[in-house]
Image (cartoon, rainbow, N blue to C red; front, side, top):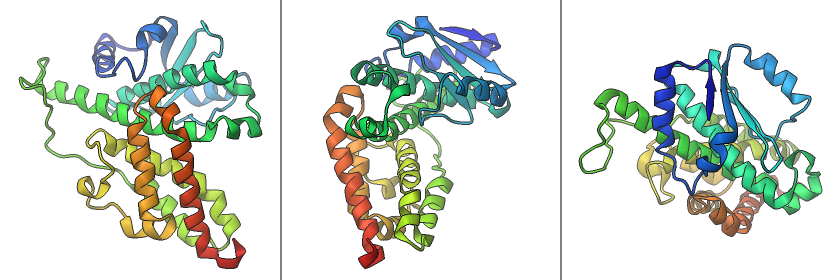
Length: 283
């Protein structure tokens, strides 16, 4: 993997971060030799220029941008937003894009050029569920590598003697999920509710991805005392939502995603049906 505009210290931290990504999660050995990472101060302009040749795939963020080459042995680029870096945030942004790169490479090999997916084919090939899963897995892995790199910044090079990392405190940003739930509650019509439904699913996937570094069972309230269980129950059904989380937890690599994609769609549909019940005969 080649790095441009990164300091030696930053590259050292990145290389440490890569050791915290399981090979089955992302095959970095296969991808790293064909991937260039560039830190840029012209991030927005470069993204606009790229969009003419590499349309949005649904995985883009403000922190970094993956330029995914669909050719089997093609080269890839990851742009990291210099203006968006605060502290070690570039570690999180880069890890996120590497997970998406690994997932897209596998999906593209199975289903053909992802830039040419027609809506009907995307539905048949579970592309929208794939996007949710990739965002969940990327958040889970990026949270892990960021936390462990940060731990070593404070505690030094050596790993804990017992192999277990311990953290004084953890926080789980919930602004996104709360805003999406509030929008769903405010929706006056079924059409308005449907318009924001996938935004809500995305926020749920990201929120659960943060929690997934710390737990292996779908029990968000045990980690986050602010988990809005009552609102989730009202909007999409709490049992459905926790089953959605549990399915994402089981899909910890690409083969597991293939095994769970139908179950994931089933709970997405179940949450949608629960939400529609609020609109009575309009549904």
